[in-house]
Image 1 (tube, helix red, strand yellow):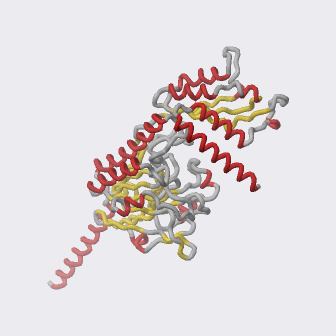
Image 2 (image 1 turned 180 degrees about the vertical axis):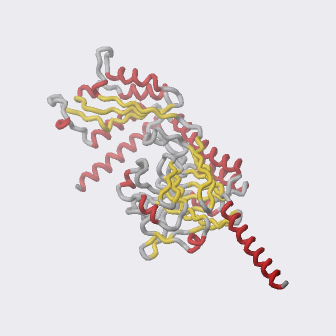
Image 3 (image 1 turned 120 degrees about the horizontal axis):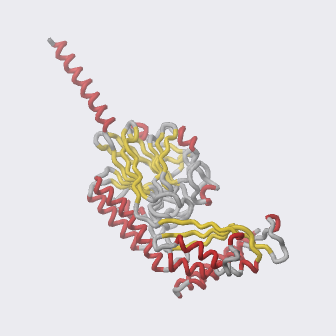
Length: 435
């Protein structure tokens, strides 16, 4: 009888162990992932009213993510870098974020964030701490700074751990800033908590090989290779920011989810739909990965070659451009006008860019003119690629600044533009003198 009792007890223990393992495998950790919110972003040269409206749209998009997290009752709210567009955000944006984090905390949702390129000081800069630090000190979120200590040549990652429905979760953060170099995933170490966790997660803010273009200031110096993601043995999930387009990739044994931006900031990815990500993570993989779109402005890109600007039906190249712009313009659209090709200087001066900008201000939300692919040739030269002559960088800067100053409606904005022009020209002249 004793043996039977022991056997029954052993069977019960084995059954309980199997049940515990099954429950751990079945446990799903719910996450809202957002990144690149760029709160406080200012469109250069935009009318003050339009700037304020755009900044409000940025706040609204972030609030849509926090509201969704609260309604869904998720376990974790993760912000993967560039929450702010600057290291010194306005008080309005600071207090707005504080209010949203307080709501998350009241709903018992753990918030975590990592530093980004825009809201973290340069590498080696001992200036003001990132704005997220104040929220971390108040216990509103856990913040992973981009600057991590080096131990024996490796970045030693900090880990924060949770037990959620019996599942051990370990989260680390790794970011890069302007001034960094190399592959940040090539040299790092993790604490034992990560190796022992059933659900190890890395928050990453860095350019990743093969994804959409971001800041050339970083990508010329630092890049996360896909091979380093594939060979790293620690993290089952990498939740990333930096790139403004949502992506979900399976690389080796790692699930890589790039949140994408919550609003269009520039024209690098006009086809993507801004939003955030709703995740269900389990020890054996992803249960769901849903991209949730947010309310946003639409983007349009108009490409015109110089050969298109003169026609028998039109009296001027400016009118040709306006005719092509009219069908694209509405109050909820941002348009980029891309001009390319060669022009004689006299022909270039026939373009009334101020009139085009004014038309854009009146008929669409924003109009950006990109003439970086426009080459100017002298009157004696023929139109050939070998003879193309760009204006000097200094001449281009002066001309563009004067156009923006003349187009500004607000005297305070004109004053700020003049000061900016002087500082940029001064810096350029200083740089040239060193060569």
